[in-house]
Image (cartoon, rainbow, N blue to C red):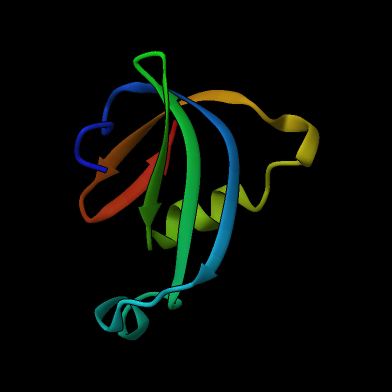
Length: 81
């Protein structure tokens, strides 16, 4: 995640699963967001347990993909711009 913060990305798809990391199960909602993104003209997969990103991406309709965005850090929260 740190390599894409404050940089423009294209989000192509996502999946939300239960986190397998014990630390993340105790914090937030225990979910893991898998983002399929394009960054620097390369396809990549990014994983995060950010509740803010999970809540936001669930609001995007299926026909809203792909979309261009930037992920920013606001204190301890990640958000799409």
